[in-house]
Image 1: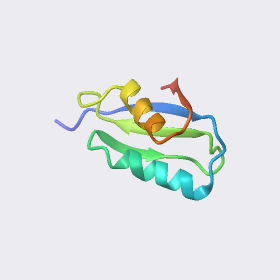
Image 2: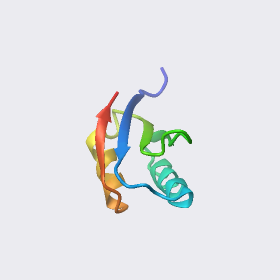
Image 3: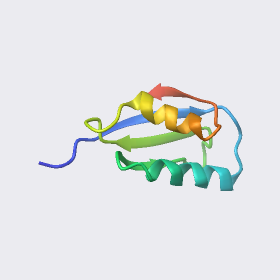
Length: 77
């Protein structure tokens, strides 16, 4: 059986620079429980994170985003 996977959408309150967005994506991908993280070019206030729900909860992912100094909320999925 493969790895379990869930998705969560996170709303980013601030308007971040391209460099800051790239760093945020990289920071999220460094987490061993995160499968992927991406911010679409057309909607820089949203980040989709795929993660292993057996390893981490969505609220923990949000807290990791907030630890970078970004204000954000869970939107859902």
